[in-house]
Structure formats: C-alpha cells, structure tokens
Image (spheres, rainbow, N blue to C red):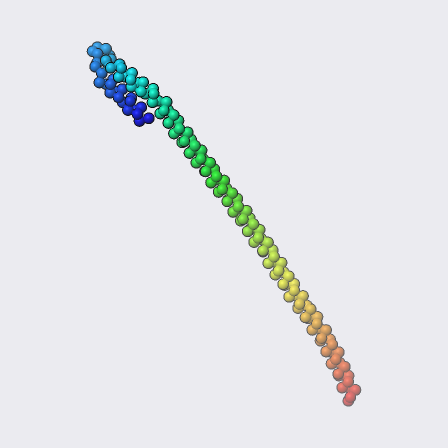
Length: 147
C-alpha cells in the first residue's frame, strides 16, 4: 500500500515538474514513458495491495465477530448468573419463610406441651390430694374409734 502511494507521489511530481504550455489553460508537457511506466507499476502492484487490504478487512471482520461473540457469551453468563442469584434469593426467601413456620409451630407445640404438662401435673396433684384427704378421713375415723 505504501509503495502505491509512493508511485502516485512520483507521478504527481512528474506532472508538477512538467513544462507548462503558455495560453493552454494549465496544460503541460510531461515525459509520457515515465508516467506510463509508473502507471504500469501501479497496475502490477494494485492486485497485491488489494489482496492485502482485503485480508486486513477480513481479519478486522473476524476480530469484530469474535469480539461480538465474546460479548454475547459474557452477557449470557451474566444473565445466567443473575438468574441463579435470583433463584438462590427465592430459595433463601422460601427457606426463611419455612423456618418461620417451623419456629412458629415449635413455639405453639411447646406452649401446648407446657399447658398439657401443667394440666397433667394438676390432675395428678388433685388425685394425690383426694387420696390424702381420704386417708386423712380414715385416720380421723380411726382416732375417733380409739377414743
């Protein structure tokens, strides 16, 4: 590509250094063979430079496509991670809700057990009191009989 630019500069120098023709509206005389030789050289080099430019463009497109694919992969991974975190958050939220229900049920059961235990103990103590009262009555009667 640089060689083509150099050749075009050489051609420009040849044209600028050409001998001007008076009253011709800017026309000049140039060495025809020199200019044709440069044009021929440009033609010979143009396909190689075009191929090189095409390869550069293709490489650029490949790099852009790779970058685009990588960006899509990063976005997909980020979306999947966010979804996993949301799911994890939902699971954690449900676990806390279930824990609250379990704790609430355990407290209720403990309260019922305490109440049941008190009632049971009160019932046993009441029975013992009745037995003791009966025994006390028997003792009182026995004492009465002894007197």
